[in-house]
Amino acid sequence: MTKSLFVIICCLVMATCMVGVIADSTEVSKESKSDELNNEAYSLQESGKFDEALLVVNQSIELNPENNYAWGTKASILMNLNRYDEALIAIDEALTLIPDDPTYVEMKKSIEQNVGTSDESTEVTNESLSKELNNEAYALQESGKYDEALLVVDQAIEQDPNSHYPWGTKASILMNLNRYDEALIAIDKALELSPNDSTLINMKKTIEQKVGGSDESVEGVDESYSNELNYKAYTLQESGKYDEALSVADQAIEQNPNNNQAWGTKASIMMNLNRYDEALIAINQALQISPNHPTYLNMKSNIEKKL
Image 1 (cartoon, rainbow, N blue to C red):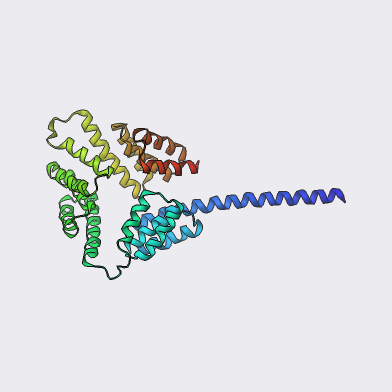
Image 2 (cartoon, one colour; image 1 turned 180 degrees about the vertical axis):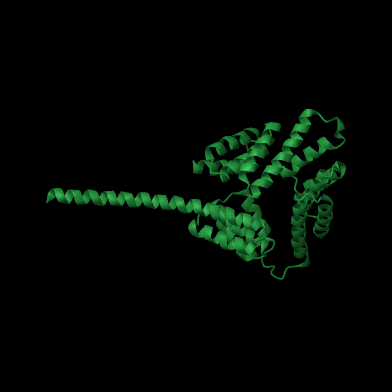
């Protein structure tokens, strides 16, 4: 009898342990699925499918309510839908989970400027139209239709001259047209509006190497080409073409091993491929070049959680 009781107790203990293991496994599975859904929602948003993106990101949050990325994505989608009151709730949730995230702090400021503007003023309408036109210009540029893209981005600037995004897009288009003097004027305007934007700063360096640069040094050419390749890798990653993006990011690094942005892009691609050990190596390289970069520090923290 005593022996039977002992066996029963052992079985109960084992069953309890198994339940705990299964629960832990289920929790990890939910977090992983939540991340996948958030990535899907982000891609849908990038394609302009905002309503569909909102449905998917809500599923992501339902699986893991502590996924700050999903709350941030939801806030971004709601902003694109001009549903600023709801966007404010979402970004507050993201900030509850990561209080000092600079991206979320900036997003909240932007949302707060628009809260209560369901009957939006002409100024806000112009900003929205400028954003749409800038996205259209970017798409035309990606298709190689540079002259058409330039016409559209000029319309975007006309709608909102104080947005740095269309000025940056214009600079990029003019670079593709080899009109570097004009590109320099555009990038200077973008930096006047957003002085600390690292992408714009690097673009300006690239343009300056090209201006009057028929006698460019090999080093300058390598850096310029590295930046172009990194931008291409980033675009491929945004399209979900991770293996192709990785190949291009590696070429960017080969051209300029000190290109911190290329290392950051590589780390991001590796994360999307769930290759976290390699992602950690890449982000450490980026941080070695740019030690206090907040985005890279945040990325490293997220990678280490996955290891």
